Amino acid sequence: MSTLDVVHLIDKAIIDAPLVTAFAFVGCVVLVSNFLGKHLTGGRVAGSAIAVLAGLALAWVGGAITGKSKGLSDLAEFSGLALMGGAMMRDFTIVATASEVNVEEAKKAGWLGFIALVLGTVLPFVAGVSIAYAFGVRDPIALTTIGAGAITYIVGPITGAAIGASSEIIALSIATGVVKAIIVMVFTPVFARFMRLNNPQAAMVFGGLAGTVSGVSAGLAATDRRLVPYGSLVATFHTGFGCLLGPSVLYLAVKALFS
Image 1 (cartoon, rainbow, N blue to C red):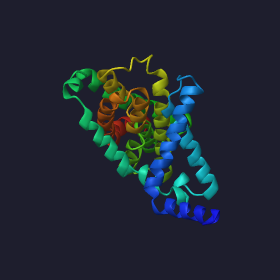
Image 2 (image 1 turned 120 degrees about the horizontal axis):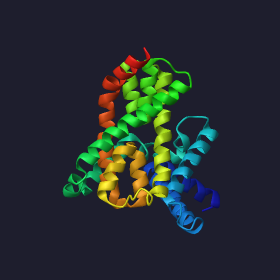
Image 3 (image 1 turned 120 degrees about the vertical axis):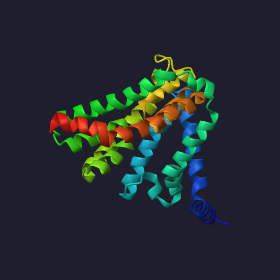
Image 4 (image 1 turned 90 degrees about the horizontal axis):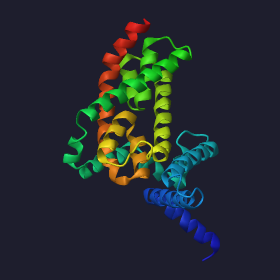
C-alpha cells in the first residue's frame, strides 16, 4: 500500500467518524494546552484557559479558510465539532453535573446564594444598558435586549424575541453574552485565589454573580473540577431567572426611564 493510499484511508476514516475525530482533536488541544500551561507559564495560567483561547483562534482559522460561519466544523474533517460543541451536548453535560451536588452543601449557600443570583442578573443588565446608551442607543427595546445579552447570551435573544427586537440587535446581544462568557472562562482560574474560590458555597455565589453557565463551568473546571456542579447549578437558575425578568420587569423599568 502506497503512502497516498494510507493518507486517503486515514482521511476517509476521519470523515466517516466525525464525532470520534472531534473528541480526539479536542483531547489533543487540551493535552498541548496543559503542557504549555505547566511548562511555559509555570502553572500560573491554567491549561483550560489556553485551550479556550486556542479554540477561538482555530475557529477563526476555520472561518478564514472556508469563508463560512461555523469555524473548523465547516471543514469536512472536523464536522463532528458542530455536534460536540452544540447545544445538545452542552445541555447534557450541564445536567449531568447536577448528580454530583451534595444537597447539604448546597443548602449552606442559603440567602447569600439568592442575593448573588439577583445581583448577578441586575448588575450586568445595568452595565449592558449603560454601555449601549453611551454608544448612542436610545430605543428601550434595543437597550433591554443588549442589557439582557450582558446577563447571558441565552437571555439576550429570548428577551429580544419576546419584546420585538430586530435581528441585528439580537445578534449584538448574543455577541455581548459570548464576550462575557469568554472573559469568565479565561479569568476565573487567574483570580480564583483572590476570590477564595475554594469551597462549594463560594462556587455557588460565584455562579450566581457570573451567571453564564458555559463560562462558569469552564472557569471552575480550570480551578477545581469538584466545584463545577455547585457553580453550574446556580448559574443554570441564573439563566432562567434572567429569561423571566428580562421581557417583564427589566423591560418595563427601561421603558419607564427612556421612553
